[in-house]
Length: 119
Image (tube, rainbow, N blue to C red; front, top):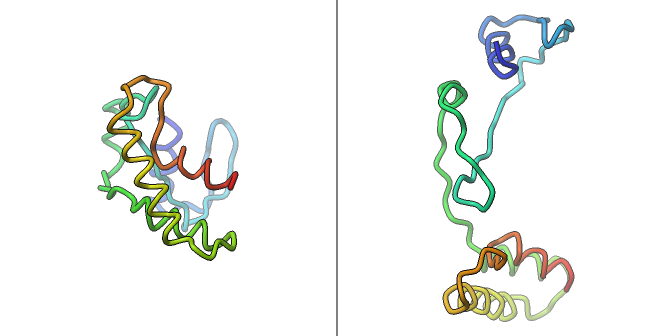
């Protein structure tokens, strides 16, 4: 069995201990196994079907970049965080739409947060 299947079987059978990669370990019944996938992101691949069968899919929504930006700016003490958040998100969305589609351009949430952290 693969590692995640071993843990799932232990949880399903409510085992206090189980064999994991040659060692007996204690299993906390509050354990959960989650896989975050972002297959559309550069360099990412799909989960193989044999692993996909072990997990239930969960649908995510697109994050509100303006709200995240505003909260990050407020938390750093910016008085005009609402206005700055609007300007930043407009800048990023216009850049994403109007600049050439080159693989090294990234105008996603991670890139926006990196800029805000430096502010």
